[in-house]
Structures are given as C-alpha cells and as structure tokens.
Image 1 (cartoon, rainbow, N blue to C red):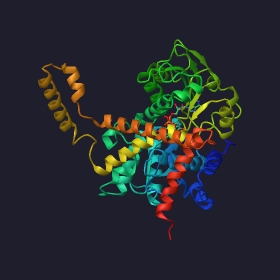
Image 2 (cartoon, rainbow, N blue to C red):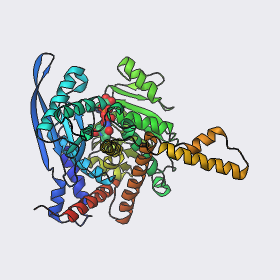
Image 3 (cartoon, rainbow, N blue to C red):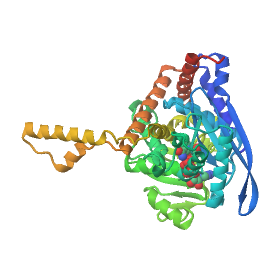
Image 4 (tube, rainbow, N blue to C red):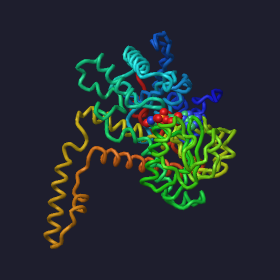
Length: 470
Ligand code: NAD
C-alpha cells in the first residue's frame, strides 16, 4: 500500500481533466503544485519518555485565503499523503463554492495507542509549531478534524491559539469542528456523513443515469456496504437508513467485517463494538476476520469511509457494487477506476461526495466571524409572522388548523435547520454542476474528471481575475 503515491494519483486525475480546460500550461502547473510544505519535528514527553514527533502542514493553494483542511493523526502519515489531501481540499472547496484554498495537516502517531494526556501534549505542541511559523489563523489557515481527530482536539487547538493571541477578537475562527459549547456549530460532526447521503440521493435521482446502472431511481431500498464505521461512515449509514430508507448489509472495520442481508442496525453495532472492542460476533450477522473481502460482496452502493488506496487494480475486478461513493479521500486508485469504469460502475468522487465537512466548517467560520448563532435574530420573528398568516387563513376560511400542523407550519429555523438546509442546497447544486460539465463535454467519461474540470475552471477564474504578483 505504501508503494502507491497518493499525490501522484491526484496528479494523474488532474492531468486527465486538464486537457478539457484549455488552460495555459504554466497556469496548470501553478494550480497543480503545493504552495507551501511545512515539515516539522518536535519533542513530546509520553509516559515520562522523550518522543520525537514527525508532523506536517501543507498549504496547497493560496488563490483564496484562508487555506483550509483537516488534521490527521495516524501512524501512516507522510509528506506525500498530506500533500495529496491538501490538493484535494483545493478542488473540493472550489466544487462546493467554499472560498478557501486547500490545506491539510498530519501528525505521525497512532492516536488509539496514546492516552489523553499525551494526545493533548502532542496537539498543543503541534499547534504551537503552526503558530510560530504563521501556519494557523482565522485569515491564514484554518484546520479541522480528519481521520483520528475530532472536536476534542479542535478545542485544544483553539485554547492553545487563544493563549498566544490574547485579545484577538476573531481568534475562535482559527479552527473549525469545535465542540458546540466552544463556538462550534450544530451539525458539524454529522456534516460529512450527511453530505455523503445528500450526494448519493442526488446522483440516484436522475432516471437516465440510474437506469444505465440497472437500478431504479431513488435511494429507498438500496443495499449498502460501508468500510470504516468512524465519524463519516457511521453518520452516512445512519442518515441513509433513517432518512433515505436504504439498507446497510455489510460493514468492514479494522478488525474484520460483519454481513447481514436483512440489514444491520448501525447504532446497535457501534454499541456492540464499544462494549466488546470488536464488531466480530455481532448478533444476527456473519462475522469474518477478513476486512477486505466484504468490499467485493454484491450491493448497490459501496461506501469506502476509512482510508486511501483501498480499491486498487488488485481487487477492482472483483467489486460488484453498482455505485461507489468515495466518503474517504482517495479510496479508489486511478488504475482501479479504469477497471471499474470499463465495467460501468459509477464512482461519485471524493472531492465532491465528502465535501459536506468543509461546507459546514465554512458555516462555522462565518458564525465565528459574525459572533452570533445562526437563527438567533430571525427565528422568533419568522415564527410570529407565520402564526399571523395561519391565523389569517383560519379567519378567512372559517376552518381550524390542528395545533400539531400549526406548529410545523409556523416554526422559525434553528441553527441546525439552517446548517442542514445550506448543506443540502450545496450538495444538490454542486452535483448538478458536475453532471452538467460531464454532459457538455462528450469525451469526459467519469464524474471525477467532470468534477476536476469544474474545479479547475473555478480556480482559473480567480487567477485570471487577480493576475499574478508582481
Ligand atoms: P475516523 O477516524 O472517525 O474513522 C475511520 C474509521 O475507519 C475508524 O473506525 C477505523 O477503525 C476504520 N478503519 C481504519 N482502517 C480500516 C480498514 N483497513 N478497514 C476498515 N476500517 C478501517 O475518521 P473519519 O473522520 O470518519 O475519516 C474517514 C475518511 O473520511 C478519511 O479518508 C478522511 O480523510 C475522510 N474525510 C473525513 C472528513 C471529516 O469531516 N471527518 C471530511 C472529509 C473526508
């Protein structure tokens, strides 16, 4: 796995799309490279021992500021991986019209093998290194969670940043994905998974596209297999089941896989894993210690939501899913995509389908800069206006509307309603842009190439309008 260069894979996909953009070669080269790569080593005390920690922050593109991207804690972190993830962030932001350049951070540790005290020391020291080099700040570079990190780490980052920026009024906008009680936003934790759901639902709504896959339109009743039941995988499955009526039949985790053709209850499985420290033996399901084979089972939608390079030329030929939704970043290698596309599999690319996280991070950043919760100013006003309208309808018709219906019709939007609605709008609009690009250029074969072309055209517009300094 380590032999596959993730960054080269991103470049390969970039090159495939570049020829449809009519962009000057020099400009393409500028868009493609990583603008700043910061590699660092710092000492931390873990259980009384000195440890040297290897870490990175890469800012791929400064065409829009601040740059934005998650921080990954994993023992596989390396410069190539962080560069690839940073590049994907640039294209992702462009696709969903989030006005940021792409960035990514990585710390080479196994977070699951470290206690909370050590993790906090590492997170705070990493943040301090970023502060020292001006690689973090509300208008400079804004991290967020990724694999192995979550709101707990984001709160530590915020606290460290604030310690060094006492009195800076916008300091809380230096990081997103924070706990709600620490200036986070409702709906951020579920955002990437929810976005995956909206994206799949939209892709399945076009009769012409879906029929070509031998499926009926709509997500209801579709079978799903998910790899990785972490933040993204668990929310994507839960929401697809609860709101879309899909059926989860298989789950792959680190320790193995479980399969049940009658459906798997995500929450019960997560509860079981918490208690038994494994998904194996989950009641009613077939368990296997092999966590890769299950990706090859018959299903409508395969959702790789763990790490990159999971579907390669080695196993692509055996994949039977009709749709692959790349919830993780880079789970399908370019060679595998060639094999799958030849078989007619629809791949909904990472840079679109997992963009829900950065979209809601953008909403959080806006909330932080405006220093007010969304909905606070207008919720009651709307509520009163709708109540007056309903009252007027009742008086004019002489009929009474039931209290439950009245409540539904007159409620003003809370922050969570606005965040979900903004995310839904973003995922629908962006999918349609990508689909239109694919339809307008007949030679484009995949949604990934169409997504890249869409992104490159938007980044190009910035360069052309701004010019090049000096
Ligand atoms: P996470 O740490 O919450 O969950 C990842 C899960 O994958 C864990 O449960 C882990 O045990 C499991 N896993 C690891 N290796 C596995 C393997 N070989 N087989 C099966 N399962 C395995 O991470 P996350 O935040 O859910 O991120 C998952 C992916 O989604 C990453 O590629 C990340 O870059 C991408 N992503 C995350 C976000 C976000 O907001 N968190 C946003 C965009 C993209």
